[in-house]
Each structure stands twice: as C-alpha cells, then as structure tokens.
Amino acid sequence: MKKRFIISGGGTGGHIYPAISIANTLKELEPDCEILFVGAEGRMEMEKVPAAGYKIKGLPIMGLPRTITPKLFTFFVKWFKSRRLAKKIIEDFAPNAAVGVGGYASGPLLKMAGKLGVPTIIQEQNSYAGITNKLLAKDANKICVAYEKMERFFPKQKIVLTGNPIRKDVLKAVNLQEARDFFGIKTDKPVVAIVGGSLGARTINNAVLNSIEEIAKSDVEFIWQTGKFYYNEMVEKTKGKLPDNLHIFEFVTRMDFAFGLADMMVSRAGAGTISELCLVGMPTILVPSPNVAEDHQTKNAKALSDKGAAILIRDNEIGDQLVDTVNKIIHDKAELDKLKTEVKKLAKPNAAEDIARIVLEEAR
Image (cartoon, rainbow, N blue to C red; front, side, top):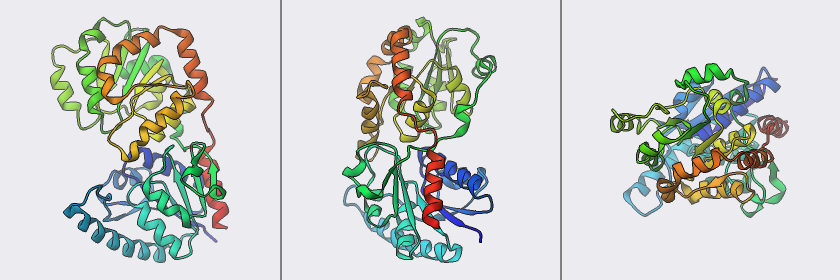
C-alpha cells in the first residue's frame, strides 16, 4: 500500500530547501510514496515547491504579532481558519506521517495532524528553538535537531541529532574556469563571496557600498549577491564606480560554482546556510541578522564561532570591519585552514536520509 506524507512549513529558503531535500530522499527510499506540501498563502513555498515537482496547498496563516495590535485579531481569525482547512487536507489526503520544517503553516497543520492521530515529526533547524516548534513538541513523535543541547527546549527522549538537510548540488565538483566565466572573473586572485540571503541584507549591502574604494584596492575578487529587495538600488548607487573586482548579482543561481570557487564567504547565519557551509568546509565571516525571532541567527553563529569554526561579526559592526577582516583572513593560510578544518567537523552529510528514515519508521 502506498505511503503518503505531508510536509509543512516554509517562508524562507532556509525552511523550503530542507523540506524539498527530505521529500526527494523519501522518494528515493520509497519510490511509490505520495507527498503533499502544505504552505502559507503568498509565501515563497507556493512558488518554489511546484518548481521542484511537488503539489502544495496553501493555508491563510500569518505570523503571530509580537505586540498587542489589531493584527492580533486577524491572526486568530486566520489561525482558526487554517486549522479547519488543515483538518480537511489531512482527512482528504490521509497521510501516514506529517513533517513540520518550521514556518507559519507547520503550526496549524502539525497541531491538527496530532489531534487526528497522525504521527508527527518536527525538524528544528536552529540552535535556539522557535516558538511554534516548542509548542508542538509535546505531541510530536520525534524531533530532529541540528545542534547539541536541544533538551533545553524539547523532551530529551524525543530528540534525534540529525543535522539539517541541504541542497545536494552544493557538493558537485565544478570546473573552476567555468565558474570564473559564470561570475565574470578574469583573474586567479582569491575569491570572496558575499551572500546576504535570497532577499538580501541591507547592512551587509551598505557595508559593501561604503567600502567600494577599499575593495577596488584589494587583491581579491568579490562576488556580491545583493538579494532581490536591494539589487536595483545597489546597481544604481554603484553606477560608474563599480570596480572590476566586484561582481554584482541579484541572486547566485549556481551556488555550486560559488562554493567551488570561493576561498571564503561573508554570510548571514540561517540554519540551512550554516549546514551547507559546514558540509563544503567554507571559511566564513558570519553576520547574523538581528531581525529574526529569538535572535536565533546569533545563537547559530555562536555555536560555530565558539568552536573556532567561523568568525562572528555583529550586524552593527560589519560596516567598519568588512574589508579589513576579509583582507586579514584571506591572506592568512593558517587561519583559513583552521577555519576550514573546524567547520568541516560540524558537518552532518546524511541529514536528509536520517530524517527520511525516521519519518518512514514513525509511519509504520
């Protein structure tokens, strides 16, 4: 009999790509299984999941407002509507198990799945658990985590240390000349990739913008992903003064090329990104976003920097330190090698398969 699975959550690439990775691995292990995604209407998953070849249904859910405003009333209206829709989706699809990867939709979906007797598995990607997953943990069958010491948030007997699933293409061996051509790099100087996430990071972008003269003097090639929100603005502001060694992109569509070519990265500290950095052994300056729930990116970054596996620079300090820190580290082979060695120790290369096997186990 065909197994059926619901995977719920999204909102950012950091939730969506691990979810798709779990789905792909379930398909490899159980080829005739059926998988349905449940996301939040209007969010990124409603576009990315169908592009990956999976069906998705949307819930009219939104994030819980952090202060008492009229939006709080709207939240509860949408929450109860989403629970009713989640109940219908579960009853119609009849899943053998439901997986929550974080994001707005996983709350009502997993809550209702548990009520209807469907085994539920939580995948917590961060070193500091989100409020939704903490609330769902009591009824979950298993909780797959990426960091140690997560018993602070979850029942110890339910925790399995799996790591975060990542996009498999980041591990592909790449032709370095092809990668240089892709980014328009014409030298064999050291390469630093600055990636602030798919939407972008204003502070990091401004740090690059305000360091144009220093970058021009630097003996380094820079790949700069501005993100969707800031690309046009950054192109406009650098018009006529973009140095030859600064290569600007809205979004890096070939992260395998970036990982293969870069000697070092500057990045936000989202959980999925960190898992990829660990797996490829990338020396990185982590600049955590201060605008995320429970400041979990800072906690993710500290989990690496405390072990000497990354350099942590606070968001409000990157403007003054970006180019100086890059120049200092990129020409220090001993420091680069140390960062590479330590970050690789934290890699969990079999995360997607380990999680998929737990899902299959609970479904049986």
